[in-house]
Image (cartoon, rainbow, N blue to C red; front, side, top):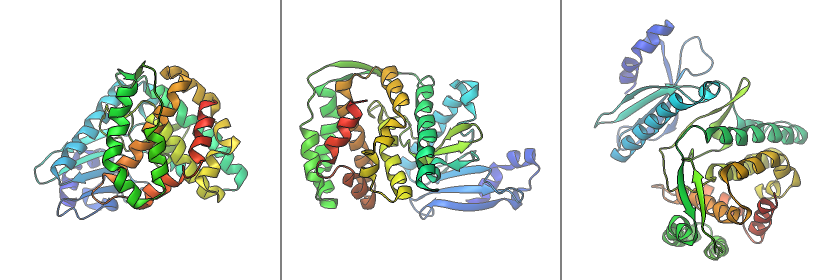
Length: 337
C-alpha cells in the first residue's frame, strides 16, 4: 500500500521537488490493513518537522463508502467557503476507490491541537486558554453555518422519539452493562418533556467537533476529521459535544473531574457571549435547549457503543459527567444563559 501512495503522490512531490522515495510514513491510527482494517498515516518529507499530507485508507465496503463521502464533503466545502476561512480546512488532493481498498489524501494543517492548550500550563493559563480558544471554536461554528446548505426540522415529540428515544431503546441494556449508573440517566432522558413544535433550520454537523480535531494555526482555527453528512444528527450537536469534551480535557489540565469543570462558573461564563450568539443565530428558544442537549449527548454514547468493539472507557467517562444529580445542575446552567 505504501508504494501505491508514493505513486499517487508523484505529481505533488514533483511540485515540491521531493523524491517520492524519500517520503517518511508514520501510522497514527488503525488496525491491520491487510484484512478489513482502516489506517491513518502522516507523511513527512526529509526537510519537514510537520507532516505534509494525511492519508486515510480502508478495506471494508462500508469504510470505502464513508471515506468517499468524507472526501466529497470536504471538497465541496472548500469550494463554497469564504476565502478567509478556506485555509482552515484541509485541501482534498486524491481519492482512489478500489474494491481491494480505498485511499484518500488531503493536506495536513500545521499547528497545535487545541486540546493541548486545555491541558498544559498553570491553572490561570488553562482558564485563559479556554476563554480564548473556546470562544474561537464557537465563533467558527457560527461562520460554518454559512457554508453548507441548511435544511429544516421540526423539533417536536415525534422528532425526539425518532432521533433520541428509539436509538436509546436499542442501546439501553448495553449501556447499563458497561456503566450501571447510566440507568438513572436513561430514565431522565425518557422523561424529557416536549410539548411544542418548533421549526429549526440547521446545517449538517461536523460529527466530532472536539478540541482534538481543532488546530490552533497562525491567527486562525483549523478543523479536521470531517464526517460524512448525517441529517439525523440533532441541531447544535457540534456545540454541545465541544462543551462536553472540552470539560474532559480541561479536567486533565486542572486535575479536576469534568463535572467540576462544567459546573465551575468560569466555564460557561468564559464563552457566554458566543453561546448566546449561536443560540440566537440558530433560532433555538430556551425550552428547546435541554432536548437538543440530551439528543447530542445520546449521539455520542450511541457512536461509542455502535463500534465493532464498544469503546467502554469513553462510555464510562461520558456517563460519569452526569451521574447522580449532575445532569440537572449542568442543564440548568445551559438554560440560564
